[in-house]
Amino acid sequence: MSESWTRREFLTRAGVAVAAIQTFENLDPCCVFAADAETAREDLFELKPVADGVYAAIAAPRYKVNCNAAVILTDDGVVVVDSHSKPSAAYSLYRQIQGITKQPIRKIINTHFHWDHWQGNQVYAEASPGLEIISSERTRENLTRPDAGAGGVAYIEKQLTSVPKEIDKLKDDITRATSAEQKARLEGNLLQAEAYLEELRQMKPALPNRTVATSMTLNERGREIQLLLLGRSHTDGDVFIYLPKEKVVASGDALIDWMPFLNDGYPEDWVQTLNALEKFDFTRVIPGHGEVVPKDHLAFFRGYLAELIAAVKQAAADGASLDEMKRGIAEQLASKYERAMSKYPLGQYRDRIGLNVEMVYQKVVKKA
Ligand SMILES: [Zn+2]
Ligand SMILES: [Zn+2]
Image (cartoon, rainbow, N blue to C red):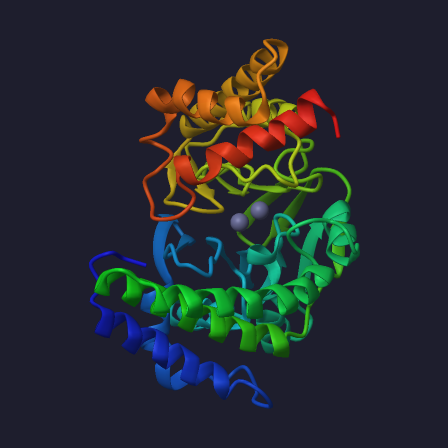
């Protein structure tokens, strides 16, 4: 949420979204959000051209996160990479795509199994009979495993338990707010959480119906789209979408403009996977979160991971406790990484460094 929004502006926008979601049930997705589409889409995404016929749908940083999407036009249909956290967001982007082409959506590619990248699949599946939903084999498995991590069908059930608690906490926090600004922000978050819960309750998960086990090329009419499986990184099933002619990569969360999320990741493999990606000829990256970045962001992001791993290993060898590591490494890496990893209201350096340290300690040092 933009800090510059007034409370009234925010509540007006969020209120429209809530009203729309309450009417979602029992309606064909083609017609549900028409009345508010203008408001909702400006609120959620900005569609930015990246190459001829290739767009980045850059998600507004909101409390209930959406991922970015890549929109790739071909001569006989549209390919969309990732589908956000909820059907209303996917529908909002679907309407925007209809504004630039009358071609149907032919394919959705899910870069990985996390909740904020696939829970909108159903909108495209309902709107486009015959839609292919493509992922890696491993991502398809993760989507149906009970214990895969922060995504998949089982995670929807978990959220149906956790989000009501989150809502209760937000209500409680609102009563204790110490400033009008803080209260307005919490009230905005509460509206998002309540609307999100409604969508979770009505969700009809649409899973990938085509999987790939190794890198391959989709020869769409007028467009070559490569799916690159380069090893484990942010998850064990990440796919990079590479357009060789346009020199563009859509990277999911394996390369983002926020601090990375390591909980389902493989820190040391991740560095190697980014090395492999770097060998391809591209100039720009549509990341899973944040703005479109130039290729050299890869080296910066990989540098953070590599230095984090080295720092945790060293601190562990020196006998530091986990709390000492968190504090010490946060300071040690701040001069190089804090500013550039804190460009947006979400996913900032200080919000994630402690958990990143802990995850590397568990995964690399303790090998839990
Ligand atoms: Zn994400
Ligand atoms: Zn992710």
